[in-house]
Length: 538
Image (cartoon, rainbow, N blue to C red; front, side):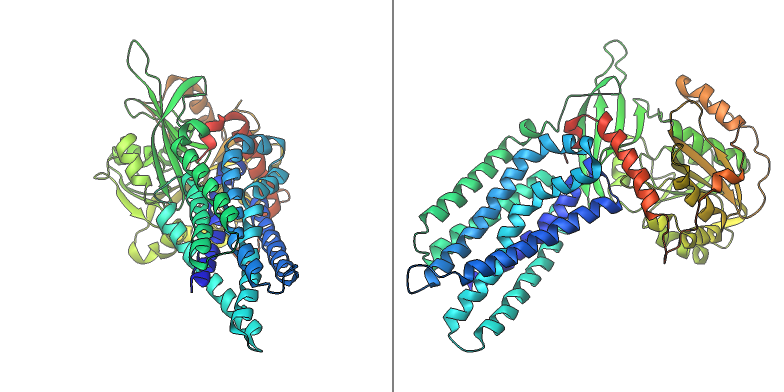
């Protein structure tokens, strides 16, 4: 019974490691097709080698006549080896993943997966065929091997399901990925110790010593986690010294609230909303946004809807845009899938939930059903949806834009905050071609002189766009004023070359997947090269 409980827990550990690996790697390598290819490939290779190795070990004949003690000893050893592999990965990754990402995001991601997953997955998966052999010898009947194999893999798979649930709902929202990974290492080490004690494993002292040493090393790393990872700062970033003021975790990412060192004379400081390696927004100590894109979105919404009465904002972030609109008397609804986003925005960035109707929902689901909730439609919908290094694929398809169109009023406009790589225009052409298939009337705005990877604002409507009205701001930081006025007064001409090579993306077919993944890799490289190493450790 104990052996089956051990295989259940080890099966859970395998899936826990895979989930945690994706979270650990996101700030360094982003979220893209290539990254998940690496994670899944290394996982499957590790499992395949582990099953093969376990089978070979189970079939080996030692010098003694009875192989059962040797099989039990090998079975007890495997969790200890997996535990050592996890601890070694925790020692290494905070100091090596940044270098791997800088060297090459794709190959670096594969190497990172090897560091995090290979040894523990091989060792944990080798336990399955070893237990099959143990069960077959203990039951001593003709069909024991076949029946035992099915039983072992059944229990292991159930454990994997449990591991997914415990990791997703019990670990990720409450503890850091570093802590969760070391917790898995301690559990694996304790499995070896329990097996040695309860099953009276012959010559189990060496196994217990290895497992105990791994658990003690994991505990030491937990005790000195901040010193080892450097995750609390201080950090030199954007010419300013920062410290982590607060950390929030959910199933959708890790948010760090950074606070700059106050000015010694005025006491003023900056706060930054930093999520999985990306700066989502920054504000000064009076809760005024210092991020250019918030003024671009607000200005374009006001320019194209000067008599705006209702607005929907998809993506809360620090809450700057919905608050700016709500303070002028506009009825604003904001949708965000992350349950921690409203709390972070309210506690640190001046967001007032009494002025804005806040919905916790997936943007795709919300816009699909919004026609049933509102008969008039919204005057403006502001779309600022980023996760990883871009907007998730299912939020840039023709079907999403069709649902978005149904949410707009008769002359409503959608205002998008996106990023464009001017050196690879085909990636952005896919977005424009898809958007135009449902909202054919477009206006494009880009700040000048901001490099080749720039904020690109798009205004889209099902109806011809009226000429933009003049807008005024009393709260734009001086460093953004001239750039903002220049951008609002000079839209980018909508000409055929903007759509060259662009193909319409649908839920069923995404011909732009590789182009979009390449653009995301370029963006992540800029992130990794600019961010301090300690900030990338979740």
